[in-house]
Length: 153
Image (cartoon, rainbow, N blue to C red; front, side, top):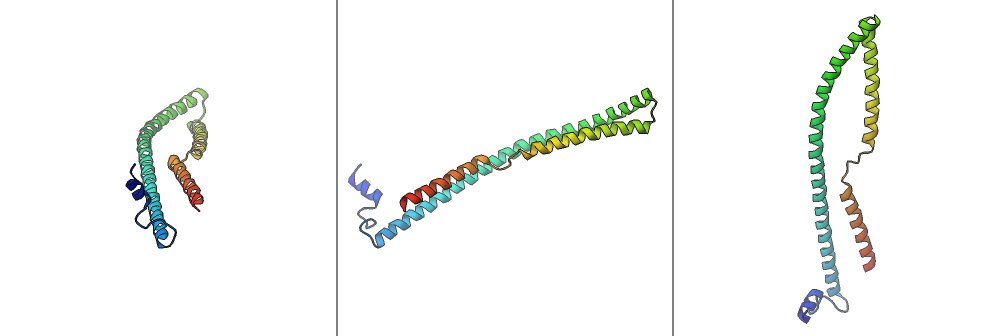
């Protein structure tokens, strides 16, 4: 590298470094401004990454929810038909009144539905909806800035 390039890079020959005074303040102000610009750019990139992660997750979730909705409609129809068939079988085979057979089948279905709802609630409690990778990156960035500002003090 040439001496001129080194001088330009370090601000030499322009009164920006030296023994103190206004030139050091100007250099410090430029360093602070540059650091703030870099932090702003870093935060913008992190937000873009978070937005991309959220968009991808929402697209996948939307497709899955559509499939689940279709499955639920068909399942409800199937459960209705099969429940009616089970009520008819219980009524015919046991000589119980139809209302009692229907109450038995309905109660059994309610117990199954409750078990499924509790399992779903448990599964949802373990789901993290935030962008984990971005949060980790931001924590690392904050730690790096803290370390570097301590080093320069």
